[in-house]
Length: 115
Image (cartoon, rainbow, N blue to C red; front, side, top):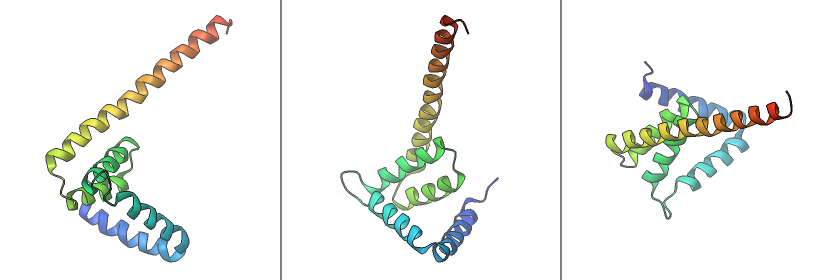
């Protein structure tokens, strides 16, 4: 099992190293992150929960590591994170259903052309 607190430290260290190697890119990424997560119409906690749900759907362990940490730091509860996981499961499965339907539609259309 992944040790997420250790993974967080490791990724943070390597992000700092990446910042030395490609400073302009990482500066831009940092600014994008800060402006995206800053409170606005949605609060920081809600934005972190959204980011966590997306991280789960795209299957990014590093992103999960960061966004669970940051969601907790923003005041999210275990139950709120669990509910976020529930929605991520819905969204991760839903697109597969839709694309599966499209694949079957494509089969029907190709078969109609004699393929």
